[in-house]
Every structure is written in structure tokens, then in C-alpha cells.
Image 1 (cartoon, rainbow, N blue to C red):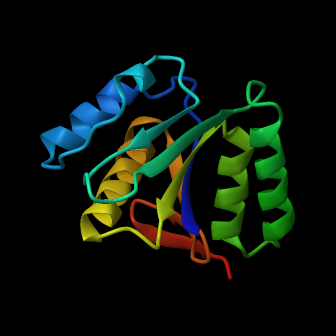
Image 2: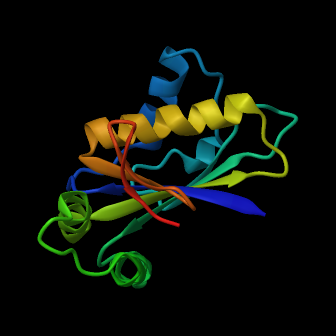
Length: 155
């Protein structure tokens, strides 16, 4: 069973796999992927951080280019969050960001086979995407984060 984190990115520029790996390596992680997965126009890849553990599964769903997956996921989040009332500023901020989302980077963590390093890689990857691709982070059963601060709790 997996646990999912997502980064909703509003940038029109998509991240390149080799630059993600380069960044994670520069900050001290030992990560790698299959060389065949280093294409610029990627939709998914496996991010390995420990040869004894299952990889993190990374998927990019772009609006208008993912067989409706990005649009469907956004619609589900809009329905789940609901409309914001006049005083729900955090909810308004999340809804506004989701409206501007160009693509979603979804990261599946294999919770039955992950160690602290895997969680650290995931956290640093999400922060990088958030900073460099105008992202907002979502963690299953937690909520939406911006700059590592919980913006909107979701049960």
C-alpha cells in the first residue's frame, strides 16, 4: 500500500528528471533512476534511494496531456475542499492555486518498505518542486502545505 504526496505546479515549465536527481544529489542524497527514464518529456519514473528498498514512484500529470487524469484529480480536490466562505482565506488560497495548476507531480511512497531516507528524499523533492515550479504541496490525510507550513488541513 502506498502513501501519496502531490505538488500542484502552476509553472508552464516542467521539471527535468536529470535536474531533480542532480539537485537531490547535491544536497547529500544518493538517488538514481533507470537511464531510459531521463527523457525531457517524461510522465513517470522510479526514484531509487536505497538498493534494498522499493523506489518512490513519481508521476507527472499535465492538464490537456494526461488522458484527463490531471483534470479528474483537480475536480476531485475541488469537490472535496468545497467552496470557501468569506473568512476562509487559506481555503481561498488553495482553491486559487488549484485553479492555476498546469500539472501535478504525484509521488507514491511504499509505506511497507521505506526508511527515513526515503521520507527525506520525498520532502526535499517536494520542496524543490514547490520553490522552482510554483508549487503547492498536498499530503494524503494531512492537507495542503506552502513553505512547509500547513495551510489547509484535510481529514
